[in-house]
Length: 231
Image (cartoon, rainbow, N blue to C red; front, side, top):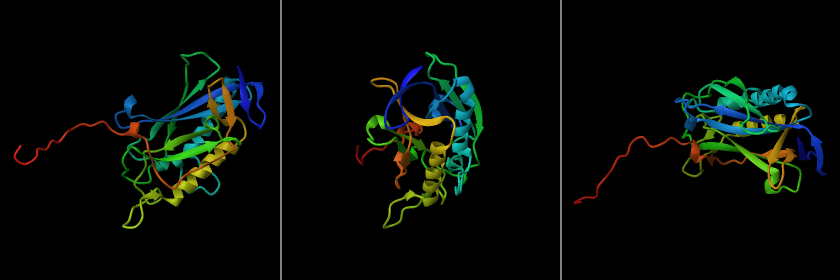
């Protein structure tokens, strides 16, 4: 598959496999609407069949491994609402849809706490390629739902808002840097317009504020009505 690849400052054309790996976490119902999904793309130097194992292993390590100086596994920050039996789904993007995935099971680390915050709450990991950092050269994934734990959240006070704890921020930065610098298949940003474009991820950041992923919130199951006095 011929793609335009920005693995350096100059775009050149290679024949390499593009591998998509999706992390799929399940809610208690295991129904599709309760899934928590994050998507990663990798540029392979060889065929899909040769390098898919490496791509899957890298995402598994991101969630369940420990980089240098990392305190907790990224998956341990996930709320106990997220079942510990997750899966990774890899796709060969050089083939036409519908694509048959390569599916691996993934056992998440035990949650750091017995309780979790609202399911919409997440911590955003932003990443980008070398400058210029245009919309097609940056991306993000959202880590959550999250545990209610001191390594995850600093509670609000009368003077300060609630913020991500320093531990989860440092661990997420370390896990992302490990994924971006690990040898083998390369973690990239994929853009499809105006043509297939892959950009090597060179850096990124984590803000000290939470994000909201509304599609991860539960559906309403009850409605409590009220009426004004005298109506």
